[in-house]
Image (cartoon, rainbow, N blue to C red):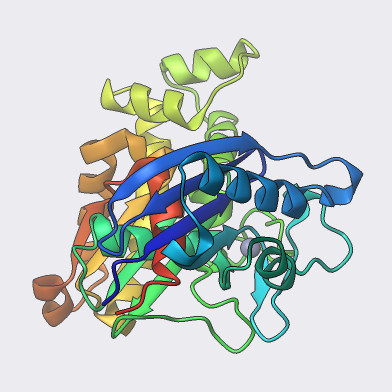
Length: 320
Ligand SMILES: [Zn+2]
């Protein structure tokens, strides 16, 4: 135990969120800056350093009042070299060294982790995960990300890519995924995937549906439109929502069969569909689980919203 503070940084493609937290996970200060992806993203790390130093000074604090900085970033984390690969939405093409550079720039120890893993840690610590030892987190946003905590430890995998639930294959003959493979969960249950499924089903649909009329009219639709219409019993929207939730329940049920977590937590923008989504996924998940799992693994909605990132990032440097 220590009474020192933690700094959590959630690096995203449009904003960088920061928070100063107690070692109990209470946010004391928070702020954010725009992510400047110009010049191959080479300004991002200097911006993070300046913002942290500026705020520490502004709050009349000094660096020795902190245990360190935790950073959540898109991409695959190379823990050995303290670098990140595949963070395409940050425009990083050359190797970047956030651990080395931010430690040098702030004088504080730095730990990095993938953004979905960090959100998983945040939900586990202060959110729907209820600090359980075994928690699986899936985030449904532009893509589908995931994080797995087993026995209180984040599962990183041999190459830092464990917990990529979005790339579990649902349909080997399905839509092409950005990863180069077909039929990944991400092609169905992400915000973009849901719209793609809607367009695909609409092309073969001949009944009466407002969603069908919107698509035929050339309107842009969103995943939210699909779920809002499904809640009103729109026939095509219901077909799409059922397929999305069946696919999610299939994957999450099988993950539960493998890991028997206490909680499976659904977060990300699509989870704003709330209990309607939760109940459908839960029913599909139960169909795919064996009895012991049904009795002991619970599906929940995330509770921290977009605050999960900074909280989970800060937990990376928490001293127990
Ligand atoms: Zn994929």
